[in-house]
Length: 373
Image (cartoon, rainbow, N blue to C red; front, side, top):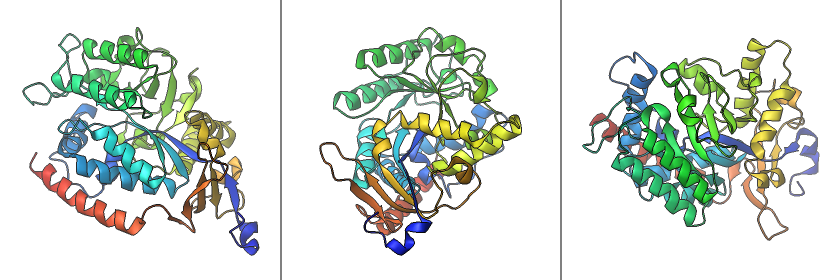
């Protein structure tokens, strides 16, 4: 704040850093991708037509630039920490290191995982649903090995699963056992759509309080763990409302890959909650933002300066669109001096213009590969 002119101080306010509890950084390059080949008839069909084409086309270079662009856009929105869920079935080994390196260069903390899945069979054919009794595929095994390699190297991470409906019982059990051995949680999409409504029954024998339960729209029972609410994504995919206030879980907020502007997610979460419960106040959803910071306690010592005088007030923030970030300072271990990673509305550690240009080039290559799938 000292470097910001005194005559401007009356239009500024400061908050702790924001945290995105569920992101897909690889989706930063989804914008402008080729149209789907046909109209989806179900949620799994939509995944097959759109997102599973995208992740199958990823290589380590596009993973890196997508993560770097996503990290830049996150920090420019005041988000200093990201919990990421990644999948790239044709580029598994090294994918988490590429994401971690990209985010670190921008100055954003990330806790990533690889979402193990059995939907790609060993013969490289894709299946929308997987029999619970089928054996673990080589791809799922490699995904879990990537999680283990990343965490054992000293990086922040979780063990990932895509979703119960694309995983065998063997893969689910292996992921749970690995998470226990590494003293971390499992990050998994759960009952996002009606097609995965049996997820809770299959996950219940394994889930712990350290798990990150994502979506939970069609949960038919309580599972332990934090519930990551993604209202914008749920509405975009037409899967329904998760009604998080009716759940006993600690609720945290994610974007599910649609950017990382967590104040925008906060506003949308609030108006969707109000549609469900007219007595709800912005303080409820502000509490979800606070819960999300618990995933990265360091975020509480980060400082985000906003060009709006009341960004630190839930009732103001809920009804004020377009609040702009002026500066972001992150707390650094072993130092009393914060690191400035955004100043005067742009990044300081990396060149935003260069990253956008490089990411656009990588996106063009990615989209060409998607056309061939």
